[in-house]
Image 1 (cartoon, rainbow, N blue to C red):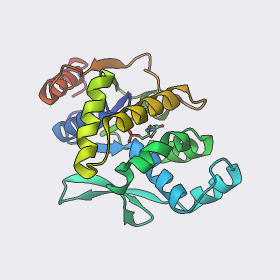
Image 2 (cartoon, rainbow, N blue to C red):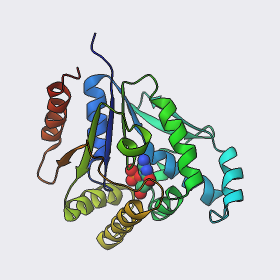
Image 3 (cartoon, rainbow, N blue to C red):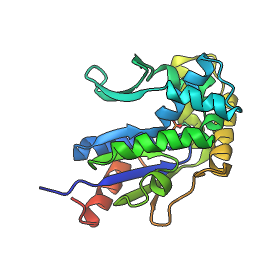
Length: 227
Ligand code: DC
């Protein structure tokens, strides 16, 4: 039987990390974990409960009341995030959350809380996790690390199409400025900023189809004799 490994996928906002992570997990029979969903769920909790996240004591006591799980939904055929017993998988994709999530994700206490849970989820291996600091901080010893990029125009177009389906009032400019703002905050924060791990393989998928990017990633897995 092949050895189970940990695969990390980091990169800029909306460059197809979750698409590739889901494809790979399916192909290998691994568990997919969306670490960004955890930061989004925490942001949702903070907004709903009017938490002042500039106050460390308030953040710490709020975190004590946050319980996050992932549950497989047979209907959507994917694992979805549960915040304190409520499925919030779809609510957390809203622009209101996207506008605040990078600020919340930059808070040291929030990262310590989320990273501890992410590391626990990887103890049995057989995991594909995507995010911003997975190869650098969460699993620095992961067997395969991928860093994804794509042209900003392509990323904006992809995200716009996705968001427009749910909210036809959204504009290209709103989507573009949100992506640029998040990329800036995510890569300039003090605690584990987004960066390519030294041993990560870069995939620029600007001109790749979903099939091509999956084939490339599968080749990486086999080339390294990982399966
Ligand atoms: O992958 P996403 O767009 O759902 O992530 C939402 C935000 O969460 C992103 O702007 C930065 C933050 N994030 C992070 O700081 N670290 C991670 N491992 C994953 C996401």
